[in-house]
Image (cartoon, rainbow, N blue to C red; front, side, top):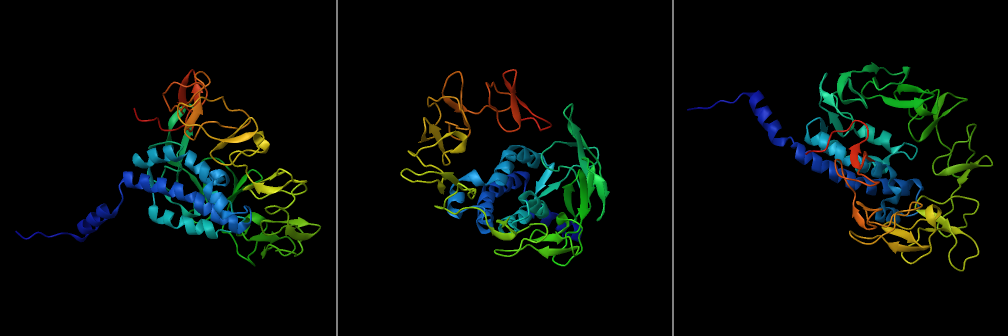
Length: 373
């Protein structure tokens, strides 16, 4: 018997064959999170806010935004696996290049928002949690501590040029930029050099709004006059009306200036003055939160030591010095390094991400999807 196939049927079959499963999307998202730190280090090195790409890539200390996303990883994975959220790996593949090339003045959350690797799938009236934007375009998740999960409801969508008192129900039209200033949400099309503006947030990252001309202008560079608003391109600062480097470099005196993010101002043994140097390594002197140790080390009686593994004897952390390795905590009762308890498990002080220890049990904070039983 001859079999015929409709074009719609062939397209649907092809779509099903090519669309990644929720499990594949969740794994792609985890790989995406793991690779963000490298891209963030590359950008920060180009922008001059860190002294060494290699130092940054070897330690997650300076990947502040990547680390913040990693803290949400478990909840976002649950949303992906349940089908409330799709992760667009094709859009995410561009993330590394976009982050590396992004203007130094652009905050990374705004950069990633433009990449938009997350797509909400929950329709109006459907249940939603706080893990990213789980609702479809034009909807928002209306939730509260006492009402969880929330419900996807129609949002108030605003056009370019509108400024409104922001609530969770307010959104800008897709494709517009969003800024928050003076308690208001502003929807606008960001302008390039020469474009009309009334405030800095209306200009693309490398530019600022020149008040005398009302247009977006290039930020002054090294040795150039700061201009009427005392602005300079990053990481320069305005010194006596001229844009200059305000951070000391590695090995340079830092008593009267700051250091790049991956260096710390400290006095080396035998040195007469403090200079910008890498964070102390194993066996080197350290001192509480003002002079913490390099990654995977902690300060023990003024000396950097390797963090301890499961079952090792420890003392509870003080002054931001954490004796146990990642995913472990020092139990106040047993004085040993134990796994950080998760939702529903007994706890003493510390719990996993988005949880707190209440009545001796790890419980969610805010509106998050419960852990699978």
